[in-house]
Image 1: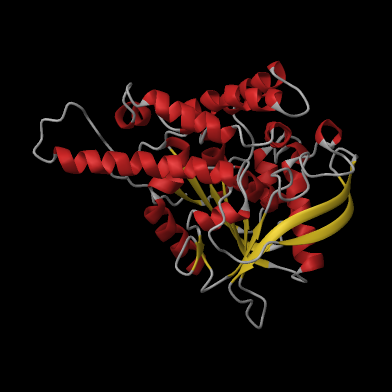
Image 2 (image 1 turned 120 degrees about the vertical axis):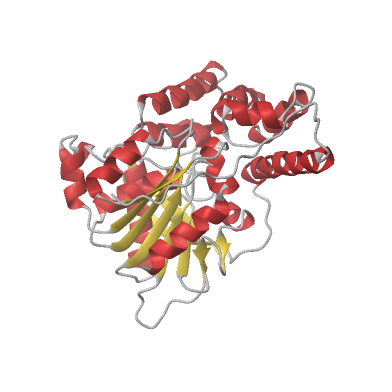
Length: 371
């Protein structure tokens, strides 16, 4: 198994400072804290800052993995760059948990020279089912809220395959890149449509959830159930309760301690709670349940080896050593079976390593896609 792991520079701040460079460290601390706050703001508000026009593919009545039917299914997507004459440069980029395609643009992950390089590839960014843009509990007129049928990560992938083949007329992908829940979709693509893609890049994703991951998402579901209601203040209260649970796992303890002082903490928590309360509680819970059921081995008799034997794409598995949202162990184990290339981000940002170590990530992915 090839490994390109490296130690990322530590992002540190100490107080009280005894160094003559204290002013510079204070500025860097505030910039880093602000960048993560902006990330949360973008996730919650979905601020539009450009990007290609959002389009929708109407998939009609969509049969789910569990046999239920999602009525009038629609999938949101954006395209960037130009499809070449041989249609061999298409790159799929699905969204992460609760994320949107607009956020992929706002966080500078798509564009010329970016992680998904639109100067080289025809980038297809797809809003995952349940994210509030594609068909979701919050926007369905025929199956709203609790009546929205529960589907799976495999159903998200099936909808994307229909979009790509039926709406865009493509029969193959050069590559797929996904982050977090997007990385889970990458693993699912590998086994659901193994001959459809040449390369797969899973970033802080997993082929199935580890027990620690299951505990996190069950805790969030428990908080939602404790304050459940269809809409209004109960939903906001549920998300307010979810916020500290989610933040507790999002970054490492050391990162939070060294970047947010006790005096700053009330402001930090209040901002996070306010922004997470903008999410629709039904969409949040629906995608959590989809992740809880994620397991690419289940159609292979729970055998990682049999699942790996089905994979035809070249694979790059990228993990974060200190990830408390998606435990890296299952992805590492599957990468070893696949003899896949790997990259381990070992800095102090936890699940958000893809932002803090973005340049290292972009360099590794660019090299892999060009090989």
